[in-house]
Image (tube, rainbow, N blue to C red):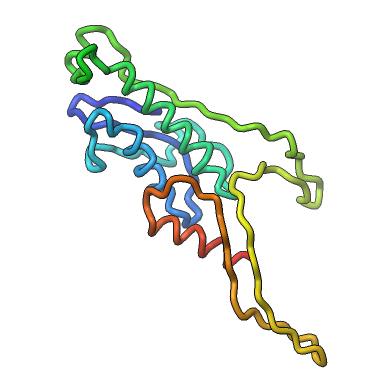
Length: 182
């Protein structure tokens, strides 16, 4: 949910579970990029996260789903606001101007992806509850002691299709986290 506030800030609200992946930075950076046409700076964006009384549900978090689905929903909401406030001369309505013209100030962003290969989990928790949201290739270089069977990882390489990089530090955290799980 994206809303222009009376003080000129934009409030972006969602329930995006953060498991340490940087949901706040992901939402802030993604929203900021979509609000740039209006000249909104990061410190003019108020995030309201993880309060079901104030923000819409973001769905489950897993496999970079939130950045893709919730992030694109935030972009959609921001784009609705930007388009609603754009004047013919390319500038944007202020809060007071929008109120005077009866233009809505709050928009609900939506975005979805096909999930044809998803299945419900069975009683043992096995299944495919999530679609694939990021593509990459992992390459493990290992040494194997053929006498003992002991394996040692020498090097790990990951090539990933991450899209446009907005925040290198958050991206690095996601990449290193993905490598650590392998």
